Length: 241
Image (cartoon, rainbow, N blue to C red):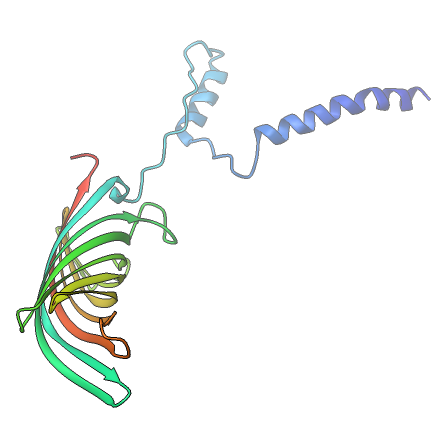
């Protein structure tokens, strides 16, 4: 009976001890460094703990400083060709143009689904001014996502890195033709090569674009498709600058 009484009295104390141990030591607890371990053993042998100090764990170094990115500013020049197709109930008619474009980009790099601190994914906003060979000009505003595949480098050195890129944009275009204001939905898919040195990026890519225009005359479907080569210059503005 006395043994049972002692066990009942000790049971709460045992529970407290187990809970305390669980809160102090977990699977995520870091191993004590060899330097601190030797210091504890030395202080115990010398029976002198007066000068021993416990310090917080040193934060592990980050794998990259790309997380300091604030903003990406970009300028792009493009040249290519576009085919406009007009379609009605009687058939279709194609018109070919050459095109020159100037594009400004504002974006920011994120990690998203990749390893921490790598940030190869860029979300961005663009504004472009496009001139066709028939003296028609139009503007386009898009939002886009770009994958800078630094994790699949084509060439690396101490000073620069070369890697593939892939991007997709969607937005709206606007032009004025024969006093008619015409708008359209534009999408663009591009792939290319990026060259990165410090905070500067140079990219060369080939893009395929498609625009569905709202033709001012009912019953006419107006669509344009084109290929362009783009030369891009981007500057990554960092926090520590």
